[in-house]
Length: 175
Image (cartoon, rainbow, N blue to C red; front, side, top):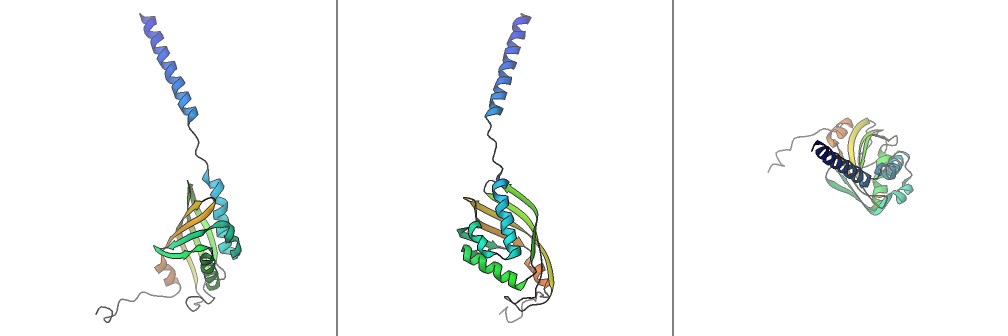
């Protein structure tokens, strides 16, 4: 009787081990999306830093959309070139670096640092002041190109470094 129980347990244990090995062997490894998307992110940062806007044609989908602090900011490649050009005109010494990056499926998230001196003309007169800021960007990819960028940063802190201040609403605004 003991040998029948021993054989039964051994047979079941063997079946369990074979099943486990089979299941483990059938698991497909998820592809390492950083291998595909990191070069695109690195080139995107490089374009911010060097101003070679024509390189965006190979990086961005024609339907590219950029959203900054919940406000649609850019549509299309030409729109992104215009935004980058305007920003680089306002901050000719602009330096963008990536501190942390995470990749998953068709998305990358990056924490970035920005430094620059506002010496060029732009949407506002040059202040001559230097700024340091950081933010988070979420990038969406399709067919190896960027289709959407969502940017979040502390705009108030950024503007305060340029010398701007928040003013309380005037009485006329409350009427």
